[in-house]
Image (cartoon, rainbow, N blue to C red; front, side, top):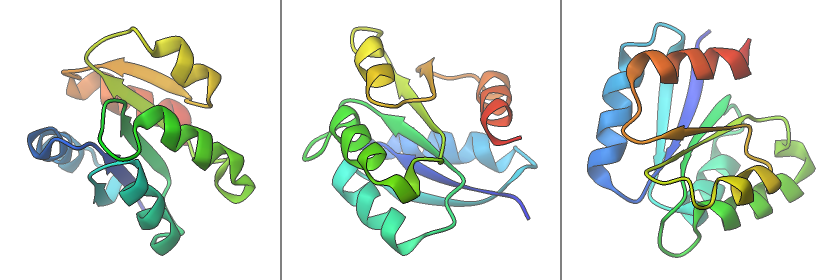
Length: 122
């Protein structure tokens, strides 16, 4: 059974680009999309089998940092790795302080994404 990935990004094009990259990854079997942190928290309740989360920072309603604070305070989800994807490094320390496992700059290259996901799911 492959990995089930939750993609959290308010930008439709970014979500589709990540889906395209993940479809090429033989370890990925399923993907779930969320438009913001609140949507992601809801999707996690409905999909108890998420293996890894790809998280944008800048989003409306609940941003990536707020999502991490809520998500990491819930002990049953604390084991799921979260890889933050962002265009700038200004909040990098903040995301790590709130429980992110890794940080990648957008646009992310397929090989880097694949290797980073493997690092956290093996």
